[in-house]
Image (cartoon, rainbow, N blue to C red; front, side, top):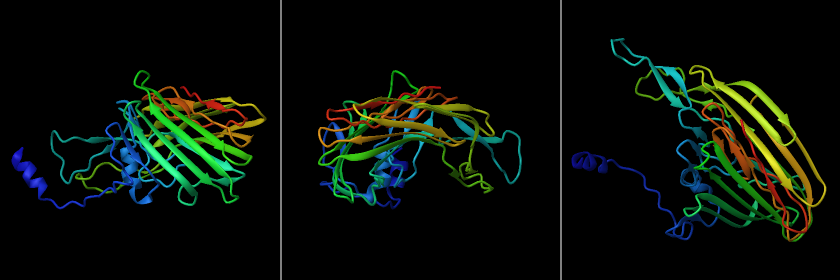
Length: 324
């Protein structure tokens, strides 16, 4: 062990120095105090959550910018052939790779039809925290829109240890100084995997080009959306569903839609200035979960989270629940 450690210590590696003002030291949390695109790849890893069965990478709720996003289920894999220059008895014939399943972490906010985008937004304050006491990732943002309206956003996500197929995601939105028309889109999406298919090199891991998951069933009704897929070679099946609960004083419009690889539940409301409108997430059952509601998924099914909107003079709450 000592010789191996000494050998590896000689290998030159680029070290990333984290600025102490950006990542202040705290014994019970990891916190970043402003949005820094430079450290996005590190943040996606550091702010990841997992229960041993369901794992969520720490990509932002808006879906962009992103560095290797992912939602994974333990034991949900795709098979691929292992090529050899010369066949021999006892050589493994197939390999297995954990695949990126349907993602339910996406919650996109529009204020007066202006989308919130991290790379372009005028962000007045930003903090993101991995809280060890609660096992959650919390984010607080104050955004000034191009029209000069200040919007406070607070989101939180977690995965359940008790219910291994469940993830929760919550979102609260507050108009600080002006009334605004809010639209919150909660989405399920199955990403295309760009891999190394066709590379006959046994030293490299299995790669996939195109979509590994084959669409089987899609449903959208009310606040619920369901997407079901199966792997092409290993034959494993999964379903990802989301549901929403909305509490609000005021007029709200809601609708949902889905295609083979994408589903969304959209809520619009007119939100007065403080005290606020607050949306909360969804729940999915059957293997995965996200915050802003809850979702669940199993090795046969995966469910992400959904965001919702609320608008009223007192705090509003929304929740989403998904199951398969």
